[in-house]
Each structure stands twice: as structure tokens, then as C-alpha cells.
Length: 414
Image 1 (tube, rainbow, N blue to C red):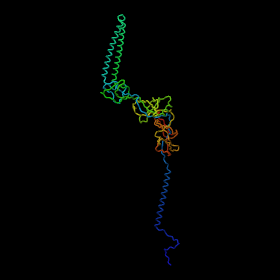
Image 2 (image 1 turned 90 degrees about the horizontal axis):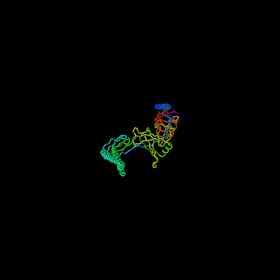
Image 3 (image 1 turned 60 degrees about the vertical axis):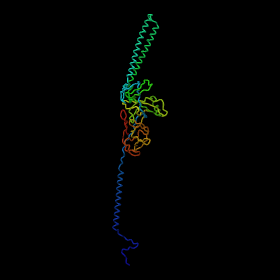
Image 4 (image 1 turned 180 degrees about the horizontal axis):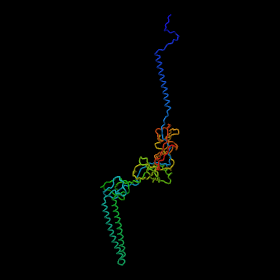
């Protein structure tokens, strides 16, 4: 039986040479695997190199809080008022003939402001002067007749009754002279009041009447009078404010011997510069039970005339005796919802957040009432790059008290 050379017997292993196409597939697959391995090796080497490079930490400036002996002060909102204020009204009636100021001018004491037609009062003065002369003439006559009656009595040619009558005439004439003199003073008083002058130095308001108007006047204000203008003093000026009952009690405990005689500092409007100095000169004698406050007043120098009655200002009043106080830059105090925090740096460079209670500004710095220690390293520069729990590279910074009269006091990181 003929056997086919291509026939393969069952169970017999036959060795076969791979085809060219199979070789190409295996070669291509090997090259791809080798490329992936090489890429992985290169990637691992790159990652290892990157992880080995040092990470640069953010630099921040730190400093210990500035320590300074300061008293506790509270700030109150107040309103300025004039020490002297007057409504200028006519004391005599007549036609207004002259106005000698511009509205809003600063006038000095004694400056002429208004002139009222003086002719009627000049006539009245002349009449009073004439009556005085007549009274003096009658008095002179009565004096001579008195002397003549006494001479006649001494020679028994006259009676005592005649002397007494002449004495009465003389006394009556004297009274007439006194009355005439008073009438002259009264007429001169009215004439002088036709010229209205400034009773004190201050700023004048706008004129309420114009030249040619008829004004009504009354020296005793028993009848309606015409308002001419208003005048307020400028220097010094009052700052009126109210303090709560609790603040008032705190003030009393620390000012038992100097009540109402304390120095205060004042800032005007929206300014934070408490450079003006004044004196607390009045505290009311009763508390307002409806508001639970007591009224107080400070008197402030106003040499530059920058303070205006009716304007608002803030006054700082010392409430306790000086004690050691911690201060940091205001920018270093960060708001945290309803509280405030300060960032500090530990010895290992880790940033921590500390909640603090803050006070007012002193010398451009914020008072820290509690929450900080004198040895804490407070972040004062590079604050945006510092976050609680993060690592930073601290470097020494300084805190300066700007308003120190003998020079800025600085404190830095030890």
C-alpha cells in the first residue's frame, strides 16, 4: 500500500518549520515590549530624580508681639457742639440799613454786623437831653430860692415854713434831674443798639433779613423780635457723647480722685488718627434709664478750625491704669467668622492659627487682649502664603510703634 509523503500518522509528532509571516509577528511583538520596558525605566528614573529635588518653602516674616505699657481705652462716638451759640435778634425796631459781613464769615468780638436806622433814636436822645437841661435849670432855681429863704429866716424876715417849702422844691428839682439823666441813658442805650455787633469771636450764619426790611425789637423780649442771624464759637469746641452704665462704672473705679478731669484723644469723621487732645470736663449727674447711658462731654482745642459744630467724631477715654499690653500689626489679625485669628510659626516651621481677642489701634498697631503669648512668633509678612498646618521658611521681621514721641520702638524675632 502506497503511503503519501504528506500524510501524517495519528499519534506521531511531526516537527514543522515556522512560516515567514509568523517570524515577522514575533519580532514586531518583541520590539514593542522592549520599547514599553524602556519607557517605563525612563519614567521611573525621571520620577526618582524629581522626588529627590528639594521643595522650596514659602518665606514669611515673623516677630514676637510688641510689648508696651498701655492703659485700657474705650472709644465712643460723639457729636461736636459749640461752646457758645447765640441768636442775634434786634433789641430796637426800625429799618435795616446796612449789613457788614458775608454769610459764613469768621467774625471777631466787637465787629459791626448790622445797622438799623438810627434817626428816630437820635431824636429821642435829643429830647431826653433837652429835658435834662430843663430839669437842671429848675434845680438851680430851687437851690437859689432855698438859699434866699434860709437868709431871710436868719434875719427874722422869713418863716421856717417858707424854708421847708423851698427845701421841698429843691429836692423835687433834684429828682427831676435824676429822672432826666435816666431818660438820656435810656435813649442812648436804644441808639447804641441800632448797631449790632458780634458778642464773641465765631462763625456767623446767613442773614435772615435784607437791607430795607423793617425789623421788630424788644430789649426785654416781651414781644416778638426779628431774628437777624446766628453766631457760634469755634475754639474750643465741645464733643458730646454717651457711655454705657458698665463703662461708666469701670471708669469710676479707676478714676475715683480725678472724675471729669481726664485727658482724651479725638479723631474726626472717618479718620483713624487720634492726634487731637482734649479734656473730659463734664459727666452728667444721672443715668438715662431709657437708654442705660450717661451723658459726658469733652472740650477740644480747635486752633485750625477744622472741627465743625454738628459733625461727628470719636473720643478715646482711659478706663484703667497702664499695664503690659501685646501689640501686632493690624494686617496680621485675620477675620474668622465672628472672631479674629493670628498666624504663628512653631519651632519646626509649621504654621498654627490662634484665636485672639482684639482691642483698639495704638501707634498703628492692634491691641491683643488675649490669645497670644509674648514668645509667640507672629506672621507679619507673607501672610497670603501661610496656611495653618503648612510648612514655611521664617525670617526675622520687626514691629514698630509708629507714634512713639521719642522714636519708633521696634521688636523682632529672637
